[in-house]
Each structure stands twice: as C-alpha cells, then as structure tokens.
Length: 425
Image (cartoon, rainbow, N blue to C red):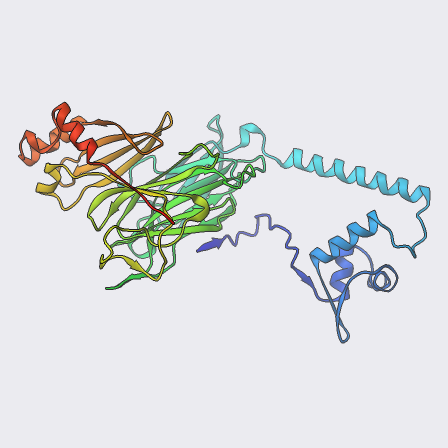
C-alpha cells in the first residue's frame, strides 16, 4: 500500500480531474471576475457543465479551452489587433523567462544535492558530496543498534527532474508490531512517498496478516524507458513466511507483487537477455522444497504466488493466481547443511561484471558458513567458491571434511546439482 506524505511543504502536482464547482472558483482559476467568466461561456464557448443553476468544469477541460482559444480563436471573435498579438507574445516570453529563472534559482546547486546519509538515533542526516549537512528528518523511534551498517539506501535522480531523491528504509526498534517501510525523500527533505505492505494472504492452513518487514531493495532504469527509475523491494512477514517482491515506479505506485512461501532476503536487477529491460533477481528460500532459491521476474508483469514443482504443497499461497516468474534457480544442500540445519538459503546477491554472485548459507547456527556461486546471464553456473567461513563452520560442527566440497570433483558435482526451472506461461 502506498502512503503519500501529508507534509504541507511538498509540491502537489496539478490534477486535471479536479472539478471547479462555482463561477467564483472558475473565475479565480482564469484570473478574471465572475461576470467575465460568465461572458466567456456565452460568447466564447467556455465548456462548463450545468446542473440546474449550478455550474462546474474540470481543471483539464478549462486548460484545454484556454489553449484552444489562444491557438484557434472562434470565428465570431474579432481578430486581435497587432498590438494585442505583440503584447501576448511579449507576455509569453516574459513568462518563460520568469519560469526558467525560478527553476535556476530554486534548483539545488550540485554542492547542495544529497550524496550521503547517516543515522543518529532516530534522526536521518543527509549530506552533500562535500560533507555539508543538507537536512534532517526525525523519525518517532530509534533504529535498531544491531542492524548492519550501511543498510540499504539509494541516492539519485529517481524521477528525471534534475534533483537527487533519497530512498532508504527505516529499521526502527518496533519492527515486530509496525514492520519496516521504504521511504522516498526529495532533495530538500520533503517526504515524497512511503511504501509498506498491508495485504493479508493465506495458504490452505492459515492466514498471514501485516506487518511486513523490508529486507532489501534495488533501483533500476524504468522498463518504460522514460529516463525515470523504478525500485524492486522484498518484504517478509514479521514472524513467519511468506514474503513478497514489490515493483514500484518513481512515484511509489505499486506496479506488481509476486508472493512466495518462504523468505526473500535480497534483490538485484540485471538485463539478462539484452533487450534493454532489467530482470529482477530475488534470492532467499522456498519452504518447499526447503531449499535456497533465486527467482527471475520481469518487472512489467510481477504478480501471483511463486510457482512450485510440488502441486500438493500445503504451504502454497492461495487466491493469488499463478506466479509470473520467468525462472527459478534451486541451489543444492551440502552434506553439512543436511546434517545440522533444516535448509540452506541465499543470504547475499551481487552483480559483478555482468554476472550474478549468490552467497548460499550452508551452516546457520554458530559460525555462518556459505558457498559463493557465480552465474552467467543465462543462469548457467560459471564458478563455485568455498570461502574460509565455510571451512570454519565445518570445524565447529564437527561433521568431517567430506561434508562440504573440498576437491575439484566435489565442486563440479555441486555445480551440476544446481537446477534451473524455466516456467512457461
């Protein structure tokens, strides 16, 4: 659910559907007296709508009438005198000069654009590139001290207006009863929009109601190719599964949701097929088959419940329709993981030189051990690395050296067990 800010300092866009419901409102919008507005209806075709003695017109219709009257005067109107045309042209030039001057003087200079941020208690501090403080926003609750820093944020020109917006999540200490949302601030600190998941979903066994907790988000070029940027965010239920991938446009409007039974921990974007539109990659775990997974989604068509190979899965979410993901990658469990943990899961995703790097946790309790898979844009496995952290985890678990891949043959065997399921519509 997208919640717009009530900050009175933000700029509210003109709504062409706004209705003016009296001659007084219409005259004020035209900048003339009531009698002049009434004469415009009688003599110049002002397209008001009547309901008895009451009149109304939408702001969009009023603007169209103004533009049409200026560009194409009615036949029954006398042609304007040359001096009128000259003054009209001069007025337009002066207006454009004033508008450009206003933009020049109100647009933040490069050294006044947001570049970095820092949290202090419940206060978000934003700085320019030269570390000059720009603005602060005070939230009601302090952030969790144990949240890893720096946590996800993005600063850039989201809506192609020439100014940098700030996207961040607010990891406060009331996560379990309020959840965590995604916030978008303007270059001057006004809250542009806030998004949090407010939907209740269900499996055949139980319902899952809010709150939901933002885990990660990423920003990518709009698939509509209009110079704006969209965001993809993953949220998880505050105590249980499921999770949801949400696609948002630059205004914070939801363009799609894809739900999954199981957590989604990380999200990234990469144009896998070279068509100029980035695919969304969301990594985590599917509860059935209790295995680390990575789903691939077209941001233009994210909907439904992520598909599963088990048609009798009792945990599958219902009443959402089939998922629209393009593919699912399943990462195999090591012997270590099968001995000491109920599942493995994707904990990190990275895009490196056009490839996908997925870190898959194989030891959850104690020292966290993980493998790092490198996937090509085709989703084929290019490499598999065994960090020292996994070796330490094996020693801590006392499961023996054969419980993780230690030889080239064992690494090749693990790579061959990575499965890619490509879903058909």
